[in-house]
Image (cartoon, rainbow, N blue to C red; front, side):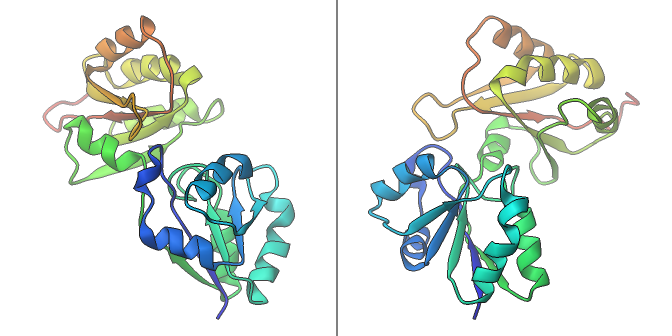
Length: 228
């Protein structure tokens, strides 16, 4: 039966790879990788010699049809991203949707993703939360921030180093400088760090400290007792 395997990979520490994921990557005929050079480090570490092909935001529309056709013809294919679970702020959604439309089964393995440890490390309520991924860079950014003003659940955002200060400043402006939040970086890596405090204090900290790594921001939801 034709099937696409969605396989999470470590977000930093290579030891976070599951035994099942290693086995599946060895058994499939082809691995679709976001960046084959980065993925080669992981595959070599575990002795995985399966052929790889690039599948990323710049080429997914162009090669999608051929990839789906090959899977439908019987090619056992796995999709991985540079880190974490494909389709979560990474390429994958278009391929998953196309395979399902063609009657191809999709099997997703459980595994690493950055927002879960960041949410728990924050100490903020985690029984109900909203994952926002990356905020729009330009168009729609203000509208998204305005909508978050009324959100009562904990909010989780991804952010890159060069936009962190801008995002923290805008969150403080729209949600309130004293809103509780946390910023996690380098999760599962040697220099993993989570800082907690108000949005104002977090902005102040990162204005005077190096901004390196990939970031996850967790913000407390609006207090139901308050109107703003």
